[in-house]
Image (cartoon, rainbow, N blue to C red; front, side, top):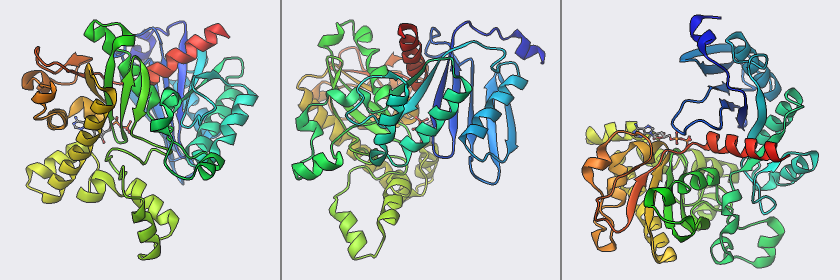
Length: 411
Ligand code: ADP
């Protein structure tokens, strides 16, 4: 053990937070009592599970460590992650894990709140696989592997859809044949719920108003992007739908398109359903128009005079403004609009353009406040802006860790 590592004191009660994808596992060891801007105690990523060569990366004590080897499945991946953590002083022998929090993408209409994972709960998450065929199986793999490895610790599932269980039928039900919709679980579920909830909870304090009196719009703009309208702490609308493909233009996802396009591409262009799925999810959005999905690269291209990049940016902003406008009408009175996630926290141009020329509606961005670097929760509107505009960094892992610890303590 080197000096840096030996100086790191393991807190008494850590939560392990796992976000399992089809070929990756993101993990964090989090002290739920820490401040939102503090680095997690340790964090890392298992990548390329099932491929020829996989990698495990660990960040701990200010250092970064990597190992590479074939990782046949999630079980091997988590074993390797714990082995790497053990080598560097933050393994299962060194830290006390009191709860494990799992991000689960789809809770359907079965789960509106985080729950302690039992065999029955796991069975229900399995029943929801048809609604999230790519995500829920990976989440289940992660849960099963972690429950085996840490069998005497409570495991908690936190659902991406949970926060949107309050969206009323007028906003959640699609205007399609009711019998077909009911039979196949077709309705708006919404995603990124943990982030919208976490960020929105900061706003009443920033406004100095009771939480049940605050109407707000939250904009989670990362690689995926979504908007939500929240009245008195309860979500009343959100831009993602039955799947995360709907709503805003995203890094690689189209967001809302005319559903007739899908029939056209299938019938006239001869594309298979899987090809269209791939097209709309992976090679559309900002990337589909400009060739890049990262806003830092997009900005560079725009600076170089690239017309496609400029168009992609304008389509992105136009769609964002559509949603902001519709949620202002849905809420009637809006107290705050908040930006979060990679783009929302770091791209002042996106924030300024999303809310430009809305003085008549009571929104005024302060250019100086808006241009300050990302540095915790902050207001970016002028003092006389009727609707306050904030940037609040999201921290889904911390939110999951807190839920996991709370439910574990109650168990
Ligand atoms: P995810 O949705 O995958 O969790 P993030 O919320 O981390 O993603 O957002 C990632 C995106 O944030 C990147 O693809 C990039 O477009 C954008 N981003 C990150 N840092 C910056 C920055 N400094 N300036 C502009 N955009 C940024």
